[in-house]
Image (tube, rainbow, N blue to C red; front, top):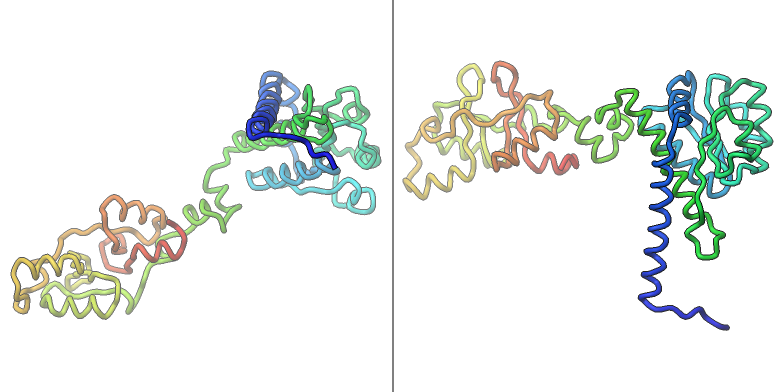
Length: 328
């Protein structure tokens, strides 16, 4: 068997060529966007139902990604395989929906089979092809040309540049709709509650703070030794100091204890109010957990007290609590 001879240099050269051709294809799309793209965006914005993306083969894979991107950025969408649509799944599509049909050649039989049914139903059709004169392009209400000069594949066979261009055009549609709808990071987070952004924007301090008996707390008139016992008991490395109305007046940490012992030695007669850190950093239970993480980072602390609007102690937060919740 004869193997194709190659070197590290030739492999890198080929890889760079692939990336350059695909980058050029995307740049070509950007340069030729026109009113047709605006019509497609408006069509999606006017959709009273859902956006249905369909395709076959590699176009189908791109279509699944486009549907997922649309759905996660505020445009309800799902993917239907064109072959499955012709065998029953077409019943999921209504006249209130918009169909995006993806076919590089514009002659995919499975798509062309369902087009007349879509037209009869009155469902708007956006076609994404590389062939403006193709049957699919001519049947479509809106045609987006994703044509490329050549595939990055050296054989000119495997869909490479064309799929990249199609995916980029799909992203452009999704982002344009996102912007037009005023979609915000908070909206994105609601679609991604399990992701990093979702955790940062959906988890509040109340969701992760320690409450009740888990919150270390002593009154301002007790001794340092009493405060140390509370610190040891609650395992959070500090204790809140409160007045008779349970309002936070200070904090005392294990670090404060070490420094106090180094300074005075015998701590038995010392009252906690005389050595506590007054006016400590606090946070509201309604604040985002990410905001609490920022406060801890800015103040170089590991613990944070949670208070209400009148500074009553209602909880405590440790850096590890935020790490456990994967906020940081």
